[in-house]
Length: 272
Image 1 (cartoon, one colour):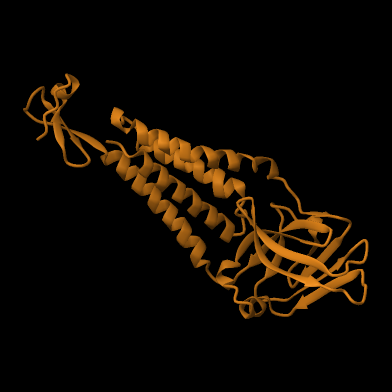
Image 2: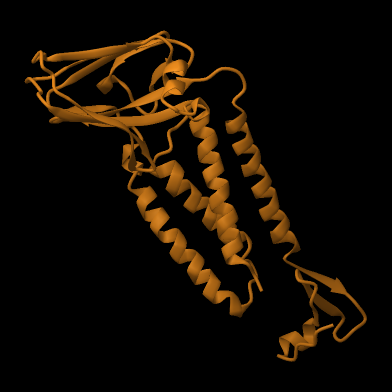
């Protein structure tokens, strides 16, 4: 019996590995397209590869596999319209930032041209609000696959009633480590968002690491290995060998079971 679920699982895993590689290399963030649409497409590829010439009894697993992929395809397809998306800032606020390698405003960033930050460099930022925010909440999150994941949050009293806020980080790596953030996870391009009182928005940031990105290249290697495994399973799933028995051909399934092709076609399977 064919293995549609196996092909689907391996294909999806291959797509996720490619998505991680693209993110780590600073090419594209983990958005709906790369984390859902692409893995769903590669999952469909794996499904087709291991369903070619399938037996009728595998219809149930085939249907289950398709049903698992459909929500991923639908959610991922919703992100297609965001390919050329730029950063947004709503509520009348403005945020400017400068790193050792780049400077920008939130709205000047985009998926194709993110704001760059050196992991071993510094960073300053400044924000202005249209009105005085007093006793307000703020949050910073990372958008992963179209889902905001909170990173940090707090409240500010703003006793000085200032319209301006800002800060400086002399060493980004040390700042992250002091807060228990694994710096290995920071390298790559990300969609970072958040809110402060009535203002909210998001920007695209590329954090530059140092040396060889082991995680990214390992993800690519995994994707290649999974693709090779899919090809091997497709090739070896069913093989025919010629023997003097019956009509001359015995079909040998991947589990080692053999049967006479002539009798099989006549509905009289004979296992070896």
